[in-house]
Amino acid sequence: MTNRTREGWHGWDEYAAFYDWENALTVGRRDVAFWRDLATRLGGRALELGCGTGRVLLPVAKAGVPIVGIDRSTPMLRRASERLRRLRTPVQASIVRGDIRDLPFGPRSPFDLVMAPYGILQSLVRERDLQRTLDAVLRVLTPGGTFGIDLVPDVPRWEEYQRRISLRGRIGPEGQPITLIESVRQDRARRLTIFDQEFLHGRGARLRRHRFSLTFRTLSVRALRGRLERAGFVVDAVLGGYDGRPWDDRADTWVVLASRPNRRLQGRLS
Image 1: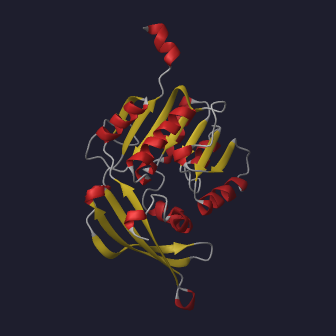
Image 2: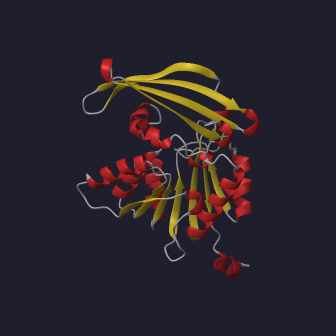
Image 3: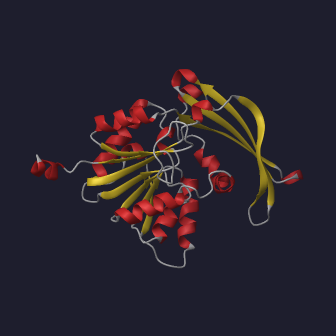
């Protein structure tokens, strides 16, 4: 498959088996507390875009927030479903297989918070995909509801390299050895960064190679703000990290908080 036909969701099915292992060694749980606390503070019903294996969804649900997670990857959702089944206390959580560009929820089941963690909007590699997603989120968000977006600002700054060993460790109940060999390519014309992943899992006759690519689009705060406002959102805050610090273009993470205007209230105030 060439980059010309590649969709942003390609590769995530293959990534499912290694997603939690890699994130435990990199992102860890730095963002989980932010999303959990935001959902708890706002109250109401939450929706997570690209919920994957439930890394964010489960802690939010265990905090007592009713939440729905949507993802198009069946292997990712299979892991999330298994984690939900293993919970010892009941939670108000469900998962749906679907496309975030065309959310399968009607106006009678709106959400008070829509979360887009882990740079999920940057997996939308075409402008029309982002526009469709913003329109879909606005449609399912309650008036006055919050749309929280996490951006990974450094993807365009990654140097290109070939077959670099990025991580080593062990995975699974048997502690099988695992190595991540990574290559990075930049498509500057289309503002895309492509991570070619090769996971070596096991050893000897049981060694398995898993190859796939993940693609992320460069999206600046300024560009996202403009797109949100054109879609009908109000941008309420731009943060430079999960600790709520002011925005800084050198920060490792950018968080944008927007809302759907409450037209009825606006009319009363005007």
